Length: 537
Image (cartoon, rainbow, N blue to C red; front, top):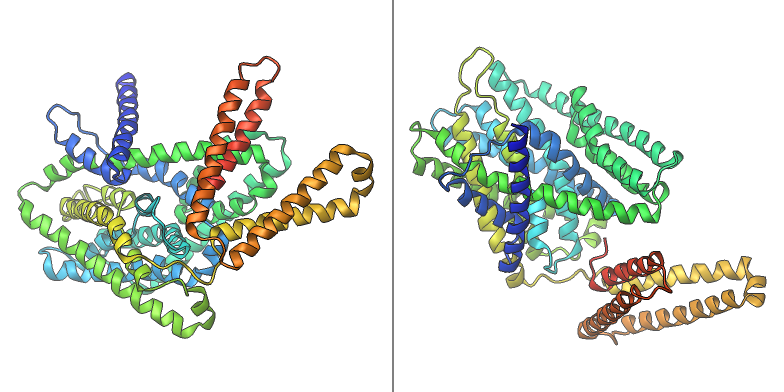
């Protein structure tokens, strides 16, 4: 049994890797391609059906994926756009749940208000992984990314709390709004406190115990699971625990981790989360045969598809209405927000609306609905809720996902004008760092610069670099450098880096040079290449 399961897991991982490569060749975002591939594979005769266990998704996949999102998000941007993020991640989730609940009661036979809220809680949170994957490589304002990333950190917790309260209402037959509101604050708040508490424990381990890059990497892999499990044990929000704890540890990574640890952790986490995302999205497609079989003859397939498409359109309309109405209201109320959102136009709002694709959290929540109630009565309309959820995921992920890059290109979103370009920011940062180093040398190491030839040469090198950066910055300010020049410059830098890397490859064959030294130079070139290509993590 264990042998068969291991082979199945290995085949699944290999299949995901190959399918992602095929998707890249076809220039289709891998979440979309994997869902479609899983869909097709699931209906191939003789292929064993894979049942998706929601507990595995919630416990195995969700904590690390949320933790990575919290680790990589800019806390400064998150705090700057906190108002809009809160309106999207909490307000929009509740408005979507309300709209779906009343629409389901009105148009789908047999739906109660509690079942409607259950469905609303399931399909309300967009999947940021799908959106970020689709938008990867497409030039959009930083504000859009910040809002989508911030929304994804919080909306899972909001939707799952709505889902849990609706589930309790279905099982008990009663729902008191005041009690639900108080419980929401309690569950979310206690989750945040537990996440911060567990985060402080791991902060202390990283900071004061004798770790190295391997131990640091293993600890970061364990951290989100401890946060999630401890919070769920105390009936708090595991999602909020992982998010809050991840934000805390990310903000202190410059203190707790060495440069080697940070580079290694980034590499390991990139590979781990890539594989986890791939497995999750192909499982969505593979789950369809069981979902269709479970629908049975209770509802005709065409009718059930119609319900799913209708709920998808309703969720899209609610997102459109909420985003446009609240953004205008926010601009009217807060004058500082007007400056902050100068780069946000109606084009940006359209992209944010269209990026609301559903994914793994919705599927896992739907699958976690019990087959039977506590009194051995079948859970009402479970199979229909599962099927509608899958249709919503398929419609939003495939149709919106495939068309999103085209919409971005057609809209030609204007860049933010109130912020410096990325190249100017990069130049200014380097300028300040060099200037600070020179002042430190001037204050503390004057004698060494006079009597130590190495230090004298290094000081001259820093002074030359400082002048170069000042000249570059002045050229940016005067508008003497256009986009084409920047593109040509970066291409030349990348070519020079490739030449240097080839030279290092030749030096590996020379016995006069140690491999450790060559690997250090390769790491430096890797970082320079990431910087020149604009992909620096």
